[in-house]
Length: 510
Ligand SMILES: CC(C)(COP(=O)(O)OP(=O)(O)OC[C@H]1O[C@@H](n2cnc3c(N)ncnc32)[C@H](O)[C@@H]1OP(=O)(O)O)[C@@H](O)C(=O)NCCC(=O)NCCS
Image (cartoon, rainbow, N blue to C red; front, top):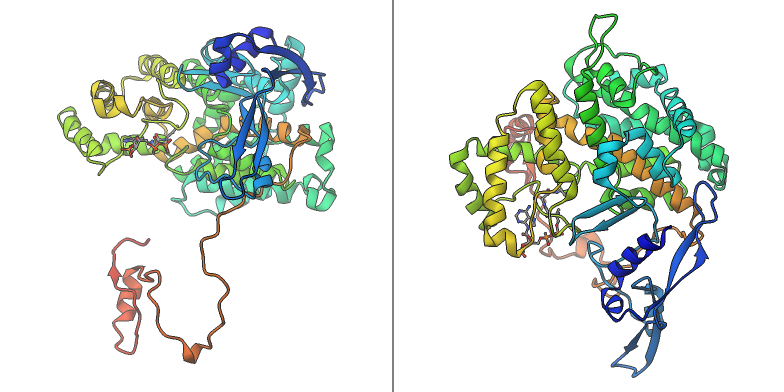
């Protein structure tokens, strides 16, 4: 790691110490990496920074070392105190070298490389290699890596059959999540529950699953899409580029020589690059969480993909499109903004837990939008998006809360103009994010500090109570058990013998 990179990192985590400039920076600790390089990490010995904590109840004081701007939370246990942090607002669960974000400055780097440069000059497969293995591949490594990934794009025929069993209108993300979990049953030797918990100490065992996951995800996604449109699945073409092959599997009909538009393949590749990793976001944290149990990577990936599916995370891109459709036209924008300020609506694609300035990925996505519009025509809702952004960025409500467009604000429009149905958006996020999840999985496996993730709680429930027999119980107010009722149940519940509390009639089948 270069001294310059270390000093940026140091400045970021210790701004106040940086000002006094008297901190000593010393490289003296090692951190195991996937490619087993003896990498040096910065150990900040800033006049041995410590935190003194005094318990007002016992009068006891402890001095806790501060390392890399963090204290070891278990040290607080010496005072019988825990840190309570719903939503992990200020809790680090690992040391990581994969991704760096400066939310105030709008900086995103993978392994030290700026996202703008990677999106411009690199390819998604190169970036996957970088994230997982720590360095950009040489020409030879790149050929080997691409070849291995593209040779793992085929699905077992039973898996194709499984995908075909989903309902015609199944959400493709539900299909992808289920199929990822199902993959674990196809490779029993890759399952630590069967092959032993130390299976993934083997680089060969890890690499095989990495090739399979990165290789097969576009195929699974393409099958989910083809299932939806009632078309037969296309076999992957390993001679094509990664995103080119994906577009091929989505769109090939009866032609023998179908070739996707290279402008769209490159645009998708760039979008995959900017979605590949984002440090400890919710789904990556989920990947680490599941991975810490030593479960097989397919099951861990299914868990991570489940987290990604939520409307506050990878589902936000889909939600942006629904929002733009609801707004409908330019003249409705001011009214919508007012509803957001009244908190009756949320401006989807705005705001971020980490970025408190413009998300650098949103800028790249805005540029990609122009490239794609030039190839396939302008998506009319872009005008509404631009107007929303213009008003929001000049309104005190958004300025005070530091709300800026995030990556999802423009990507949905690009996907829409490329002809993707809205429910494919989280899938298009999931494919590239797999590279980030795997990079963190590898780092987790190599980190000697890894323990099973098991947070603590602050218990506020009853003290011990005596069990009361059913016939002796009085009725307490509890959670309402009312629920929506299907039209069929409503018809059945009209029977006067029924004492059901299900009263909320709905014509929708919730
Ligand atoms: C991403 C997100 C979950 C981050 O949440 P967070 O870090 O917990 O931020 P908070 O919810 O504490 O928001 C802080 C304030 O900004 C407001 N805010 C945050 N995002 C907002 C949005 N998209 N629209 C309107 N107001 C928003 C909150 O209401 C809150 O206001 P308050 O102080 O008056 O209560 C949140 O910004 C959000 O829901 N954005 C929309 C979904 C989205 O685009 N997600 C994709 C992320 S890549």
